[in-house]
Image 1 (tube, helix red, strand yellow):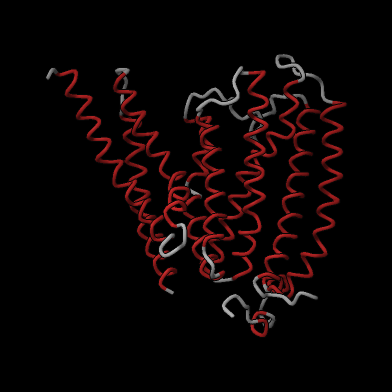
Image 2 (tube, each protein chain N blue to C red):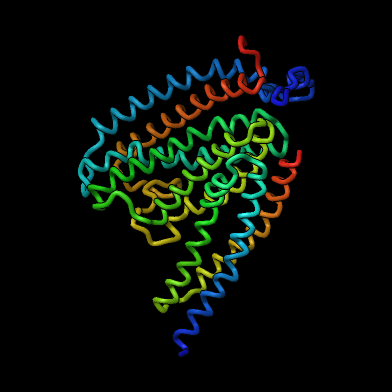
Length: 253
Length: 103
């Protein structure tokens, strides 16, 4: 069978390896992912509740935008996650090409749908915010267009994976595509700085003092962490499915 | 033809000269990835589209800048950067995709 892993080899734990490397083997990773996923889901729920509570009950209305601005509590985390997940995905692609570890390729394909979901969420929530604020759902602005391109990158990745029947070939071809697509990431990130666009520049940066109220920032960061935990949880659940599907782990494990 | 029409035409030709190789290089990666895949033609479009659009934007904005009487060097530099990057990355990616397809 083309898709089967060799459990005998991948399960061996060589004495010289650091202990955590054993989780690079699907046999050890499958139960670990199963144990971690519920905790990540719980963490995501708690953080999301806290973030929404701070965002809707504590944070003040914006001086210029009124209540409309509150969509940033989902919009900004979704946009951050859409780029971050692609970066992580590309890292896993690189690992799978260089080290030929199948688990990293599976992690990349487990992350892709979540990344696409966050990208779509960022676009939709941005459109919902743009209608009352800019007076239009969509403009062909640099940031919006490049975010749309990111969505197409995710969709292309998933389409390529679905189109190739043989899992091993699909994994390697997708890894190449994922690595080529990472070139677009800096273009998206810096698009608000490189071009004069309608989309505002970043309000939050690591190096400068925040330009928003502390409670707004706290709510946004809580929501970002919630999205992060959610992405990890969903990826872990999905990678377990992929592991079973591609014959890495027995169904009862 | 007057000076004012020749210059933009030359400029357009120059942007095409720099931009077209980039598009071909990206297309080569897409074609190699979809080699022998069912529905390859449709797939090729969605794979190549997001990578091509930045190049098209830089090329078009060079024309727009020339039209408005602005300096076109920034757009040209960006197009040249695209070409340099594509020349570096795309042949490698095409080669490894072909290798994967041949396995």
